[in-house]
Amino acid sequence: MFRILFVCLFLITPSLSFAANQLSNKELAQLCNSKDRWYGGLCNGYITGTVESLLEMREQGLIAEAFCFPQKMERGQFIDVIRQSLAKKIDIQPAFESIVLTLREKYPCE
Image (cartoon, rainbow, N blue to C red; front, side, top):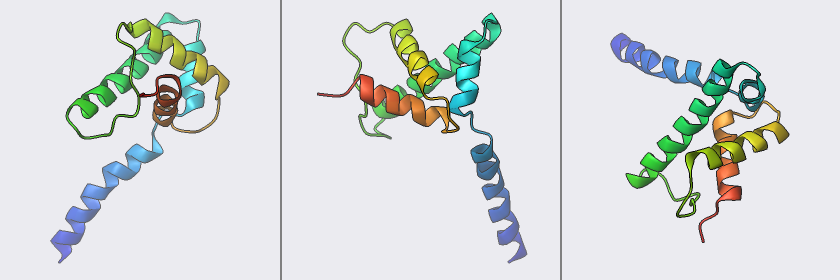
């Protein structure tokens, strides 16, 4: 019984710490608005990684189709759209959620 309890505690702990350490809108907006190119690169990388993860999960059938890019969409275009959206929404909402909501709003599936 003690072993089962220990294993359950061990499995739950990483997910709790992850939830507490998610990047917020405000933090991502600060990275995106920084004059330092390093922080700007972190911003672009976070956005790109999030979008590519969502596209891969959708392709594997793990999530529903929440947004649809136009045929000739370039990477820089969606990064700019999301960065502009972040500048308007400086709050403590998780940045991941804000990116998903922005994609759904700006690139709806028809």
